[in-house]
Image (cartoon, rainbow, N blue to C red; front, side, top):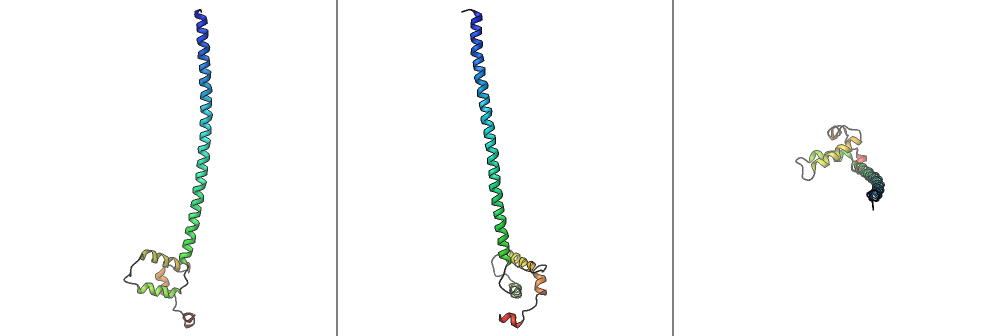
Length: 129
């Protein structure tokens, strides 16, 4: 075999190896692109799941606030109880004050202290009810 034939054979081998590496690189690029698309889709899916969970939590929180602000008792009775509860008998003072403030605000007062001074005593008809 001559040097030219050996070089030609080596060139063919090298060309074959280069072509195989190019195919492998293209396949890797295709797989990488597919993986990136899958990651993007996953991120979108996770984002959708998180947004749905946050919306549900917000709705639940709104419903809890609405429930907490409702009260079947006359406001005057609650305000009187609050004013007589000094010293505080125990429990979560801040939570009760927040609830009472919410209840008074819902009824148009600027806080429980204002409501205490502005809410009239119930009439005899209301207290018999």
